[in-house]
Length: 94
Image: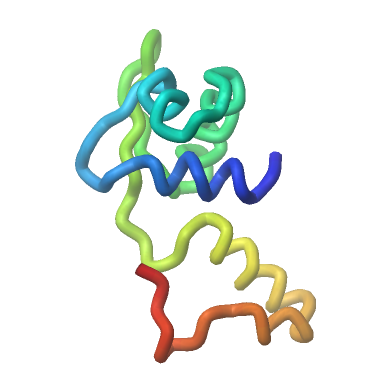
């Protein structure tokens, strides 16, 4: 799973609004099967909330860091030389 897929689908969601897999597929331009896989990942790790079973709906969870920024931060814990790639506090991500 590429980080650009995760970021693209997560960015397609607006906080407080629920989306079906098809809605997110249409908004992101990614195939429905890929969106289904990414939304399960996002909900499993707390980046999105899932409701429903047969046709689940997803919403973005309010976080300070995106999923990709979180991965970069975790990489810096194990590989400090990557810390230069993180945004500074003076340049917050919107």
